[in-house]
Amino acid sequence: MDCPVCSKKDIGKIGRNKYFCSNCFSEVSINKNICNIFQIDENGSLIKIYEKLLKDILVPNSSLKEKYNI
Image (tube, rainbow, N blue to C red; front, side, top):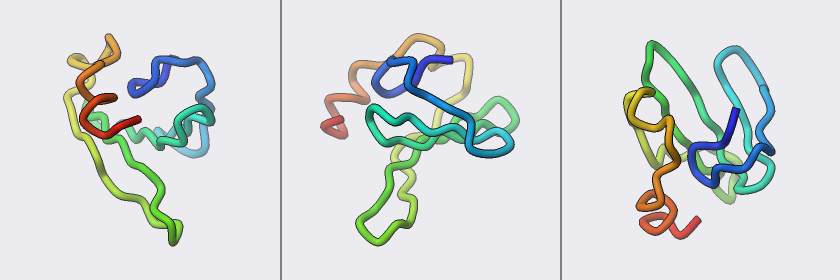
């Protein structure tokens, strides 16, 4: 699986339907064909930065990288 944010293959499974990219430090959660992307805050909490239907992010979105400066 490729990371939907940075399109690297540095993504590993951290739980049921949850993945973490060690390249851009994003957490990806997939639930009922909806993909949520989170960034880790300074205090360790997760901040949702993106939600999209899974079929719409099969190709990495460059505007997501630009919008959140990732």
